[in-house]
Length: 428
Image 1 (cartoon, one colour):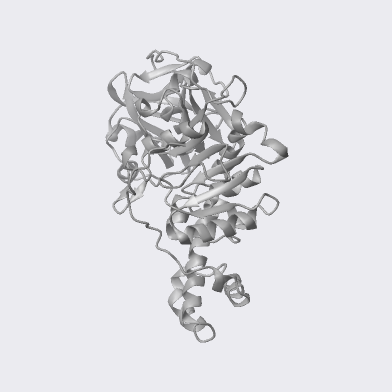
Image 2: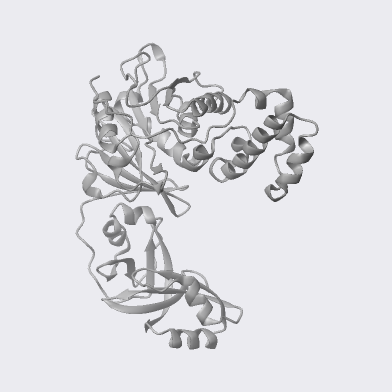
């Protein structure tokens, strides 16, 4: 498979921990169990006490893993996080379980993997830049045979352990410590599809240029094309013009927060639910699992503010599918540059949050303060689009008092700075 192999484009940056062996010992396991609910604020005193009875290096490793497991709970849940091992960067960059499980389920709809391989063996997916194995776990749980590749020896050791522990009924993973850009994709066991999660952080923080990813996006696209099928995890802010015509782009949110985008490719793509559609844009909202797919609609009309205001989910906005959401609501925009939909009727939709608007005011902090005081509003939710005012600054200036609550939108209506006051739809 003649995938171009550019030079390595960055150092390993995993703040490598000690090998797992000491932690897997009976003494190490007992230490980790004792540290499950420890208070990091008291770590110095705790470490001093533990070193009286245990080797200093083991205590340091156990404390490090205890901290990482506490951080990982939000992504993996308590049941899995406290059975896993991590590197600091691995916790930060790993995909949360709900998103990884959704992605693994989508791999079942890719033509080259849907039916498994000859002899009844599960289809094989090669996970490039596997990190601590978060995605490999869910791929294995979904029934795929997994090859996991990473250039960090620590990450590879941890990924192998994590997959075997959390997916015990799946085929044992093949874990390879190698630079993904020099890894031979034709070597056995050959993949039916690729999953690539390029590093999007460097020494100075987030990387916004896709060609500065490690590996670069163009290389990842070429690798997936060569194999014939796969997905590439990317930052949700990627410009739409960078999505190749033979790839589908999916933006994913979880609990209302946009988590990532994925570029999907399937050389054997065919019509059907869940299938990869070249050139398509979709927004998937978890945990409901609902998906909105682009239909090429023109921009919604701008209209006056109606009784209801709808705030589209971030994935809908990132996927440029506000027009599709507005069409379902028979609504329009309050401003041609603002992603708020307005309508006269309340309609249920999973793609936006509805608010009932009670007041529309020209922007005036003095007038807003007087109105809130008159209505006894002590709890104020501030949302903004197209306004430079910071929510915390606004709340401080309002000097709120009272038992009532309200939501204020700082925005523009037909180009004019405006305040919309209301409450979540259905709430008295």
